[in-house]
Each structure stands twice: as C-alpha cells, then as structure tokens.
Length: 168
Image (tube, rainbow, N blue to C red; front, side):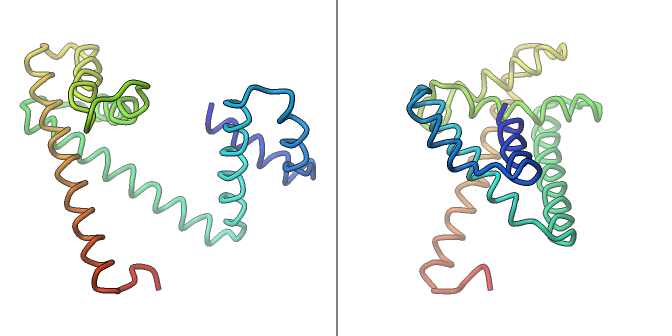
C-alpha cells in the first residue's frame, strides 16, 4: 500500500505533470483526515525519490538499500542460529520481514516486549518450528535488535556531543 501510494505520486508528477499539491488540496475537504495524512506522507516520499534523478544517485541508493536488507537478513539469520534454528535461505528471507510486521502492530508495549516476540514466534511456527524454540529464537532476535539500537544511540550521542559531523 505504501509503495503503491508513493509510486502513484511519482507517476503523477513525472509522467502526467499533475500538480500533486493542488490534488491534495482538492482532496483535503473530501477525504477523512487519516487519508489526507497518508497522502501528505506519500507526497513527501515521492519528493524524496524525485531527488534521485541521476542514474549514479539512483544506483547508489539501490546498492545501499541492498546492503541494508542483506545486513538485516544476516542479523535475523544469526539470531535464529543462536537460538538453535537453522533456516534455509528462502525461509530466512520470509522471516526477515517479520520484524517489520512486529513494528506495524497498532498496539505496542514499551520496547515492543511481548508483541515483537509473539510476531516472530508466529512466523517461525508457520515454518514448523516448535513453540519453545520459536520463543527462544525470538527473544535472541529482539535482544540483538535492542542491543544494536542502544549502541547506535550511544554512538550518535557521542558524535553529537563532540561536535563531529557524520555527513560532510
């Protein structure tokens, strides 16, 4: 849904030469506030993609995206291996999407405790993993994600305090 909305706005702007801002203003009084909010977010994402006009920038963006997804896949696979579950490559790809699903659940507990584990364990259960092993592996994965998040936060806080710039 999100990708479709963003691509729709990119299509309108680039190929139909429609003024997206005028379209949103027209629809604001006719749609529920939530849908108007989504339209604004789609437009922001489309504008961000519009900044990648050159092929070299688009290629760099694509390669960095591949690196991020491969790193995510590796972290999911390694957490499951630490929990004693060894997945085949396609199963690992399937399970790499579940941490994203866990963050999309509308009701969340602090740090996603419980909801994250239940989502991951349900995905593993679909693959035929016993419940006890699935819960253990989901706890390993969540601990790994939280640990890396804390390390990233501390590193960014330290960089900000020192006045160094990450982007030159």
